[in-house]
Image (cartoon, rainbow, N blue to C red; front, side, top):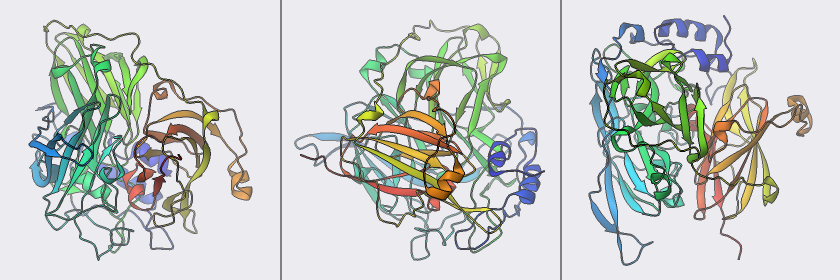
Length: 548
């Protein structure tokens, strides 16, 4: 059976209870080479040398769903941006830890912020700045396979490095977590977050150059929630009824060790994607949550390396999506299924009122991953689901000061096997070519020349999806000219809010528009498939000072 890379993305990992990893591996090895940057031909995915846990061997819904603790400020500190006042300061230490991912599995060695997986949830309010000291308290040796042939991970650099990025935050460049601003164990960085943005579900994670995929896989992520008075006035479910659900996948050996896939080249172990057969929600496999028969708000966050999630509820129960990456939608959107690519978020309201004494499963590709056990009785539900949420003024693309056309490329070997992905045909170290002016509006059109969809993320800004349009690949390759083969397709209903990560489909031009609000400085844009990001599918951009 031949699999394309996209087929592999859709079928290889979880398929909980349907296939073992060995089944997926045998299909993938027969059909799907994996790329190495220093070779002239694509390497192959190596077979695991350890026995892996089969999800069908695990009892379902025996562990309660962990809800990450709230981070607490450790004190207050002065900051140059706020003379004469102090700001709440949090200390977040990255530590090695052991985590039981399931009742029937040995404890798994991992890394976590404050020794927790996921890390503590940071809660902020719009317009109320805070400081976080991100402390690298990790061991000096990595426990996952570092590829020293990748740019930024050469042997002359410390094996363990870290720098934290709050995904979706409008943060100054020096506090954004630039990939080359990493620091080794025993060091820290004090970052400043103005929180000058609408209420939204953000998340924080490691962003160290060349090893982001490994550090996040090891467990370095957590939720960062911005709240504001306008959202609070809507009386949506809150407090104990507002819960982040951080979704990822992992491969785990039967002795409890994390397994990260490698190529068959021991000197260059990087692989183009990482798909696990175990789905974790808030760090547990097949957890359950006791709920009341009332409304709940769940903040769905895809923190996986490569996997996208296709989510639905049992009993054909609908979800009401109320927010996307950068905050509230204009109005609730009833959805039977929600698809999230890596780094995308969707806030949903689920009403369990009609399921008292029953259970409801959250499913990925029709397989249950979380069970909600609905109590027979509830405290009085005083929450609401308003018909309108927040007005969103659409950006007129005609007002853009600059229209940029940027390609998503892949480098193939002589047999047509993809070896590396690039943005606009450039590597990380090439000169900066995207240099928008502060507060200017631009449109960026992503011309996807590859065989896969890619989740593209821009730091600093929020944007709107304008449209997607099919184009003639042959005309582009021959003349670097866009010849469209069909009409522009408007954004999907769930994309009508503010976004920071967009799915750029294969064979399509995906166009976004944004205003470059925030401080001048150097930021990055990249594919959020972490294996791609780590191996050249990431580029810096520089916001220039506004013209006087």
